[in-house]
Length: 312
Image (cartoon, rainbow, N blue to C red; front, side, top):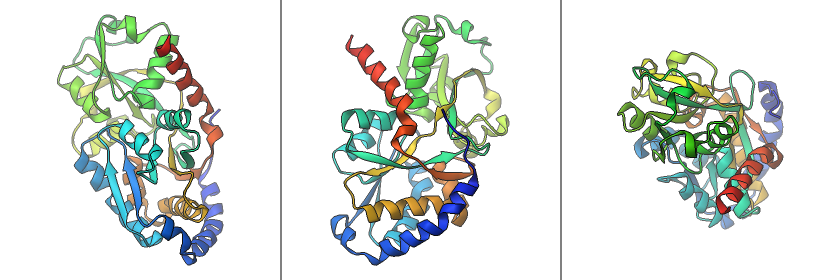
């Protein structure tokens, strides 16, 4: 169950993390083991926008860590996942399903540092199924025999959760829709629906805030903010149950001093540099909250179930 956290938790931890930061900065040994800090960026929108959104984070990390930071915008989710497993990346922000996929493949690859607390205090978000506003589809039932665009096979809200929940509700994507496919990312899937390549699509959103703004945070908000979407052009016809917000992870095998330092940077970031924090988080939010592996047990079980079903 996703518990409610408050900004006070983050504020209370700032002093402790500041102390850890001082200790870590004084220790040079970890920099010999990690001379370059490589950050993976999930696919889902065009590369230029992803690099722009993360430029301030790169600068902040270089200042605080004292080592060069390199950004790696992968073309899809799998690229970042494999980069972490193969030790070609040190850090990334993941969706819950991506984290689950890494854990199932290699339990010793990464560990969660923090997750995102929404503006309403929750630690979760939603998958929504949308259609063009000028289409005749008003409800999920209207989409029987139509086409659906998932975002990415390793996306929590763009595939794993909607596929699981729709099936449980009697709308098995394999039989209910005439065709399903992957749009190549959340933004690309929305564009495909707007261009009438698919009748419907799924994406992620905080589900709180102003609808006209694309809610407070998520793919819809990001597209609205950069002029790529007018919410009047789509209609949401289905919403999932609350999904655990994805973690920001670091490789398990890096020195503990580095883990503590990066966690401290993230926890302090919304207070020290709100604009940059919202750029990497995809919109408005309260804070980055420390989190552990147990938070993702439900999603891990769901992904195991999907893998088992695929194997027959």
